[in-house]
Image 1: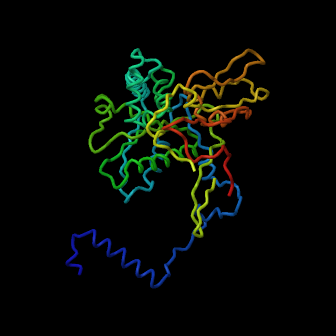
Image 2: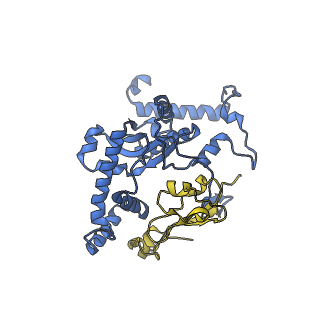
Image 3: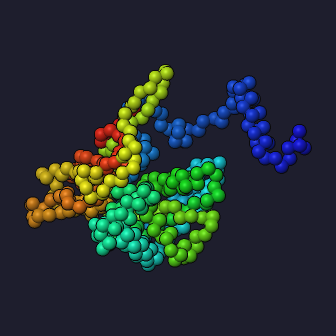
Length: 275
Length: 110
């Protein structure tokens, strides 16, 4: 048996899973590791209507920060955040991400400048309110929005317009920027895995008194060879997201109101909608 | 139940027409507001501005230009006096119509 399956990892794995499943079904007893008191999971027991525990509070109080102090974040602290990313769940444990940390003020500023140039270029063709092309730009935008319906959604469209005007900066003056790259050969959904590990970084940063903001418009750096070369991005990597990190001005974190989302619920052979 | 019709799927809204693009709305409690400018400083859409002198120095919501408020509620979290709050979220017509959402609510304890 063993001889025949040598090298055939797929069937070996399958066999292992199946045999484990059968064993558990027969015994229904799993040898448990004794629960340790100091694990967070055993520290907070759920009761209905209980107060928020620290993890929930960090999740609820996280607000995107758009005004940073000049003070640089210590290197060890950023290393600590990246350590959180390393333990994020990913499809098939493929860990298909890569990080670039930029802590040089001049580089960040020139990235912002480049992004502004690109935004100006796009707005020349697509913003019918300011473009000298006028009505023609409206036509281009109608086509463009249909092709890039996520990138040119009204909100990023407005952000691009503000960036072209110069009222919005790409990283809002953050002293440290973490760029997340996706390994395009990763299992299943590498882009989603990048999002998951990024959220680990963000939540950990807010629990340590830092402020963060997701910057999806780093997309602008991908157009043109300049920054791809400078950041040494090449196949199989692709720039996905940026996270601006820094000490916030004031206390921007806090709980706020948000929209409720309808949830479809199927139970006892009946559908219901919960808000 | 809310859904997107074929016509809506095919038509892209014009972003500057208030009929198809409603930006968020903010209520400012003028008695509580002291015009410190924190909200205007962090507003991602640049929707808030400070106007007035002395006691009349208050925050105001910009009304003319779209897009401004994206109802992120950052101002509410930032305000030291709880004077600002989002009262209405943004919504778009046609293709970008928002589906399956309820009203605003603070985090609920279950």
